[in-house]
Image (cartoon, rainbow, N blue to C red; front, side, top):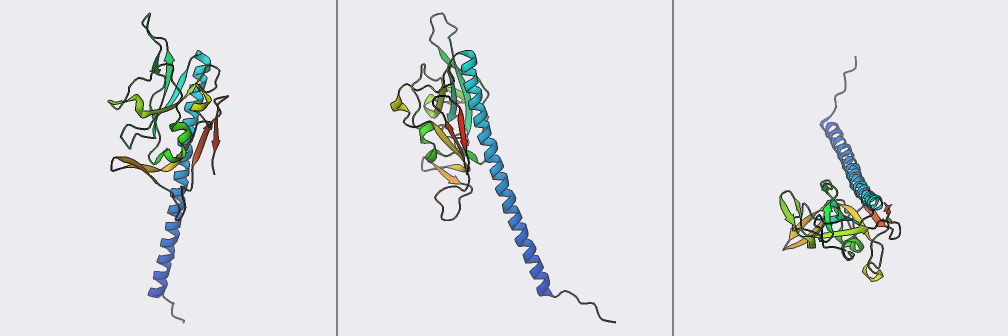
Length: 221
């Protein structure tokens, strides 16, 4: 009778190493898929908010603003926190129209945010307002109007642009995976899926607004 052959220590170590390698590759794949899913959910949230704001403008015959918090000094809020404001007639007989909340605050999921470097046409060229934005509150804290970026929809559904000089390009923004760090008093974005040697992230969710229709256009790699 032939003796049963046992595994050698080298063979066992080799099997363990291959198992660890496969598990690591599977984990990276799952994490990548999870990040892409969170990115898609965040982008779809903004598209839904934009379509809601546009529809409110058409239905109510007023201006609505899709608002993003960008300069609160809170990295966990900036470039992630959104709401909708609506321009309404003041309750006072001789009062000026005023902006009031038309939607609850909505926060992008952890690790998903707007990339400031790739969203200049949304962040840097806000249109002139028919009435000043009010200070807003979130989590019991005040957010100054100067900490907000926005696009405004008209009753026709198109974007409100006071002049062509204010918006040289259609407003657009780019969502990425990453986190905002406060470094020496300045915000710095660290990409969560940057590839070695690449200038930017491996994945993104681009939203550009058509100035004439107000409709959001989505682009993904």
